[in-house]
Image (cartoon, rainbow, N blue to C red; front, side):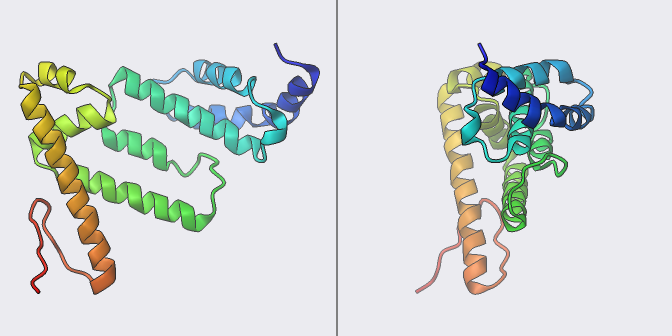
Length: 188
């Protein structure tokens, strides 16, 4: 149960921003804004007001996270759509611009790398790491053995790690193009 102090804080610091969140949520036609906001209010009721520096940002972040959870549970949206929600510029994140640009570039890079994984590897990786399926569930869903699933997840992680390594080397030694899936070995 809310005490008077919490109720006053919510009324003064959160309620004025509900309309903005509702407008942002209206972009997602398969989302019930009332349900999202109700879940957000339940979470906000547990917040200690003194610990919150940016209430508007908190409300948007909570709503965004609930939307992402909804899509993950429903398993009806592609990784790129999740990335779009994560990158949404209209969400009031309040991060400094350099952080936002860096995070956006990082997510774009990861999305690009995942998109360029071999098809079976990408499918298995997405089911396992994005949608949270276990190896056994992936195997059943795709009619594969768990061993194949485990190897493909490991392969995806290796290829993603290689891509990040190549990206770091590009910053150190200038631009070079390394195709995904090939190892680049420095010759000494």
